[in-house]
Length: 262
Image 1: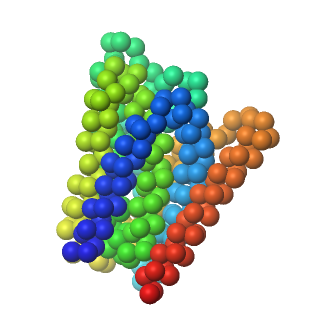
Image 2: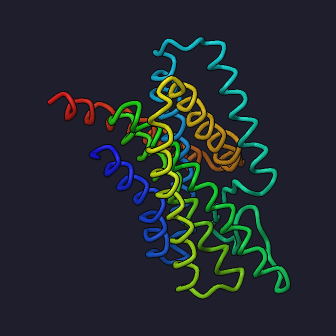
């Protein structure tokens, strides 16, 4: 039951806390912060996937070729989900006045807002399953994975919140609907706990799918946003924030391992 409680707390943090944090900030502050958070979350996601989740999977008895095949299938799966507009990553940039991937006019406002909520709900549900799989493999890996989800959900939810406001939602409704879509992470986590526990032999493959989700978000969405011609100070800032994300993963892993050992 302790594992289930940890999963519920972690998915609440990833799915709902990030929504509240995003909504607590003003739009102008969000615009300035999200640029830095995008760099930070790219570092956190890549560090978690490549330094922790994938090594955990490859330390199992599973065939490396099968795991690499799963990684390829996972990347293609999340690409197809996003192509079907069911796995959205929306971030706001200062001065845009709109989400990175979406512009709305009055006629499509409601439909556009609903599309964002559906896509975000599916995204959060997948995150919940990923967190559950990580906790079932190793509690330390579970918390590191949950931290990675929170790191990339804050700029994601900030972008969603701004897009919903632009789509005609009031601030209260944007917060409420965003929070409800965030609860899909808890549903995914609880279902994952009960369904995945019976399939321990599949755990390495599930971890690889989790890593493929993190890698896809970082490489397909976050890093391309940083590929702009900027002044050297802004470029240095991106590098520092990305490096900070990697450092956070390493420090969190070390601290959690130390606490777990004692």
